[in-house]
Length: 513
Ligand SMILES: Nc1ncnc2c1ncn2[C@@H]1O[C@H](COP(=O)(O)OP(=O)(O)OP(=O)(O)O)[C@@H](O)[C@H]1O
Image (cartoon, rainbow, N blue to C red; front, side, top):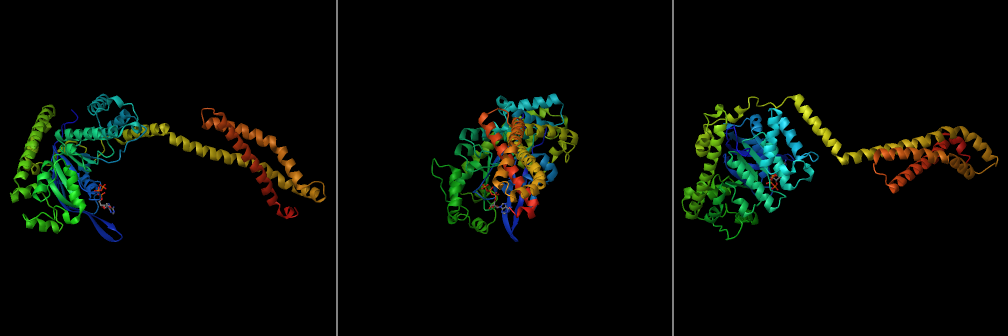
């Protein structure tokens, strides 16, 4: 049920002449160069390209995480994107699993629900349980995030976002670090989310052929430019139409990547051959090739491409039928407020996107504000932080190290100060007696140190025992003994050091020594 986009209008994301640059040592570096594209609801979009092509930058720009130095238009259902509203209707799941490691799956979900939903507690609890069930996380609901597998972490990140039911979801390399089975599970989940009526955009590095089949649209970028934007299933015939025949049993994405990265002179766009001089010229100028599909249809010379196109369209229709089922189920259960907007239509008829507006943002009358009040946010964050602190063993080790350091410092000064304070007063007596040949400095030093020894041993032992039991629970004899030895030695060294400092305070007399 949560896989479907319930009660919200699907959103189409479109970008026109989108450029992004950064300043590097007073020079301007173009990261994204005049990109165009349209990502529609119900489709799983793969954003691919070689490393450093600009995939993450494009995702960041589209998700609204980067808004400076961006040029061009980003449209949502045909209207200029309102960043604040857009952020409430979208989510971005990053490559790194940014989860609080010391909270269990259930606690993470509850915190998320408490921060983002204004429903009664029982309803939130039911939602959390259902989402965990749907995403197969129910059996590990009491496992801490730090102990989850890579796939489970990814699903937990998705589960947290599903609570707010966003119509657009961005994923940055959701399959990185996962084994093939987990990759398949993860992409299947994304596909289901797309079929539920969402727009799913995910950057992905060379998926296997089996995974790639699940994607509906491929947006391929290289050096910040678009090389292919069309049905994922039509990429092989498209490449063939450009003179690059993908060998049988070869992963098409690998082939595309090799053709693009292998050698500049062999990039398909530059080598397209005799059939479309204008387009080649454009591409050589570095302009974005907007839609390979449209171009191939226009050139009308690749029967294989047309076949692939037809099968891609058929697949799209089948997906749309599933979507229609989902949407009709949704519309029957959703409120009358949505009755005048049928999500099917916006999906089935691509052109209707421009007529729609950002009505999904109407779903939340408090757009632009946080879902819950500051007091509630404080309460949830306080509990969350408190739990994290008391469960974080690293913090305990650090505080123990700090405690031991200051304890040693205290011990040193306790041993040092009596000597520092008393020795200068005795100094003149010691000097007179020593200069009158009563005793040597060696004998005086030994006598003074040994007379102090019981105090320099007994007090550090008592003190060390207290500190040891404060910082380390199990009594390990060797560790305890070592610690006490360090305490006593510190105390003795400090006492001798005290004699030196005492002598230094009475330098004039000390010179005679
Ligand atoms: N703030 C910045 N300053 C300088 N260069 C940047 C900045 N941000 C991105 N780039 C450059 O832009 C290019 C695209 O980076 P981006 O991270 O978008 O690539 P990517 O396709 O996601 O790569 P990967 O697949 O390796 O993660 C890279 O060459 C990167 O070094």
